[in-house]
Picture 1 (cartoon, rainbow, N blue to C red):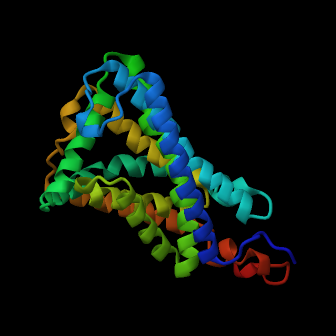
Picture 2 (picture 1 turned 90 degrees about the vertical axis):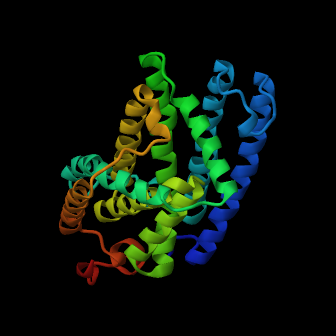
Picture 3 (picture 1 turned 135 degrees about the vertical axis):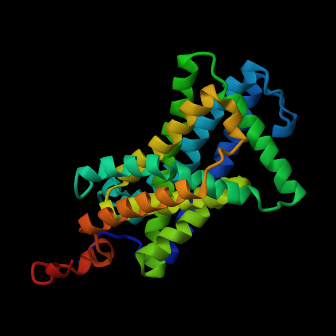
Length: 306
């Protein structure tokens, strides 16, 4: 039997994806330098850029959009074409959720998670950071403030596409569709893969004051994908979370660097609401480790175990 995998070892799969990711970084870096040169943007560090120059902001948004596609989406698709023996998008997770109500629940979960996320952000910001981390954080904040400055609805729409939609699609395909799948196979347990992938997801953003809330969101997104069986669920949830933030910050830019203060009781209610929704996901799920990772061993005589 040929099976659905050309490359069966999860460690070999990880090596392939890391190689593709590294190549994508090099290509994206060269593209960024070329685009910056053609746009007349000085090749200086982020801390030295004039973020009050609309020309620089516009060009950097284009660079951001193309980077999402090149760094995350293309390596994931290439990985699927190399590793899977047909139906690459299906095995990346582009298939319908087990139940249609899970899409609505995923969106609701993200909205109800905001108080808990803000509370975790307050805790995270109370942790002292080395000077280099603080400087890096300030540079990232200045860039995001420039990106999210909106003079009208058109700017907000562009921001939603560049900062909310594209990252939701591209990051979910790379982190949940590829890395989470690999690490669940390595750990041989869904939650081990979900949590470790969420750690990598947060670390990859290099925004240290938001590490804890972003890791928590990564766990939520990973659980939604696993229990629904569909990457569309986590993509929608990711987009809803990013989109709400973009919409709010576009008109209240102070919240780029200022974390809203949240009472502990509100955070507790938020945590309970999120836990209930995750429990509903679990109860309605038909996904099992055997069904996802040992499908080549299933046949008409033993498929009942899935």
